[in-house]
Length: 250
Image (cartoon, rainbow, N blue to C red):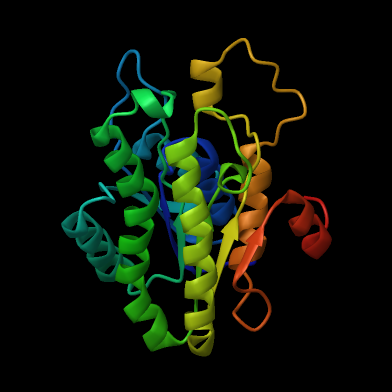
């Protein structure tokens, strides 16, 4: 139980990598706040809700609470963190996982869609980090984990806007890690490659996913990263190979 009694917020945790991270953090003893927009499943939409993730955590004997939040809205993020501080007294771990992408080519990409991707993937991480840092600085401890993607480092067809946000998120991680080191707050990034998620199964049911990474693997590594302080691990962008070098296979 590496994270016993730690309080963690995981954004975008109604499904996918975020859900796996939330479950593994709870399994490691953390009290997890499942934050996302989806409260009810709708026909033709991706499966998964914040309440579904909380139920799975509680069924495993963990502690979790669901809070609906649109992380692109400053007032939603402020209310999210205020509720967590009121209920638990602090935030020890923030996982900025929420993200969106689009299948359109750049020439077909609307300004509205571009702005949405920038808002969710980058502005959301900024707002959430900004909201939790005062308490972390006060207690001189904390861990912020930003979930990036190899799309920020490798050119992938049809992912210009998404790749831009992930490259920026990695630069944000490095800069914030350097600035927060003096406060003993660790800031690291996870860089998943192709991962089998509900979105993949929903949109690409015929794609061969053998050899792809699993959300559960990223959940287990997130626990190990969250357990480190700024003296041992900070300001790093961690892909699977690097994580295996540091922690071994999970």
